[in-house]
Amino acid sequence: MIAAIGWRLGSRRLPDRPGRAEQQNAADPAGDFGSQRFVNRAGRLILSARIPPPDPDKYKSIQDARDWHNPYIAIQGDGIHFLVSGSPVEWRIIQADELLNTLRALPVSAWPYGRVIAVVDGGGPQSGTPEASRRNRAKAEEVLKSLGVKINGWPGA
Image 1 (cartoon, rainbow, N blue to C red):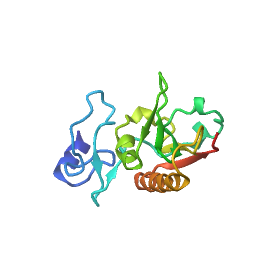
Image 2: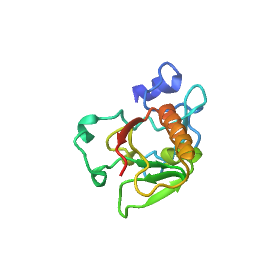
Image 3: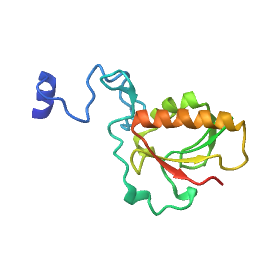
Image 4: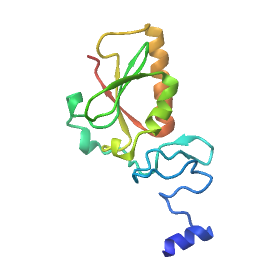
C-alpha cells in the first residue's frame, strides 16, 4: 500500500509497473500481461518488463530444438519461420516487419529462459534468394536488439 501511494503521488515509480503514458491497452485478463503494449521514454515499443533477462543456466545444455521452450525462428528468403513451443507444434511464416509485433504478442510464459530466442539461418529446405535471407536476417537482428532479446544462434539443418 505504501509503495502504491508513493507511486500515485509521483514520488517514486515502481520498476515493474508502467506509467499511464507507457501503457497503451488494458491488462491481459489472464494476468500474463503478454498482450499489453509498452513503450519506453523514447516512444519505442518494448517487451513486457516481466520477462526476465536471459538465464543461460536454463538453456546452455539444450542441443535439440524439440527441447527449446522459448521462441525459435529460422530465417529464410521467403520470411521468418516462427515457432513457439507448445502443443501442437506449429510453424508460421511471417515477414521480417511482423517480427516485433509477433514477439510482443506472446505471453510472458512463452519466455521461460528469459529474453533469449533461438535463431537459425536457413534450416530445412531453402526458400527465397540468398539476398532476401540476408535482408531478413538484418531486420530480425535489428528488431531483437531493439527489444533487448539475446540471440542464441543454432546451426542450420
